[in-house]
Image (cartoon, helix red, strand yellow):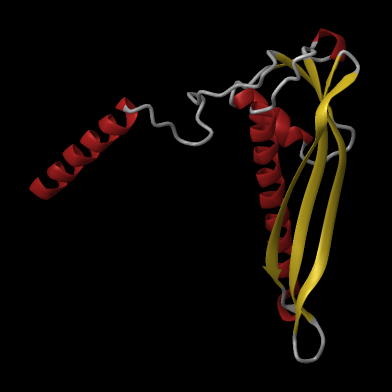
Amino acid sequence: MRVLNKFFLLLAIVLLLLSGCGFHLRGSPGADYKFPFKKVYLDCGTVVICSNLNTAIKTQELAKIVTNAESADATIKLVKEETSRDAQTFTSVGRASAYLLTYRVIAQIIQKHEQLGNDLVVSASSTMQYNDSIILATNQNEVTFWDQLHESVTNQLIKRITFFKIPANH
């Protein structure tokens, strides 16, 4: 019992030191970054990560999401998404044993009907092992891989927008 009390005391001291130096967990609302725009409009079309992006902007309080482009300081337009599933390695009988899954999104920042800067291109990829003998488990595993790739691309896009430099002429 005495060892347990010392452990909790040590843990409390470490947590106090970390919080005192300004340490924040990734994704915590106390993060010191925001979008360079106070109000944004999301123009997603049918891009899969739109709901993830919307949720992340709201929960991290990066900007206020508005319902029309006219009342926004900028529009985040998700122009295009691409997915690919390419065989990466093969078994001795010529069947795929691993696939490279890639997810890519192209976004633009629009202000006053003009694009600011270049396209923001973000992508993520992952290698997924594949086994024909356990097809159902492999298919469920692939869904999980795609979800992780979507989350990764969403986080990358948020970081790119957060550090986006507004051109001097705007």
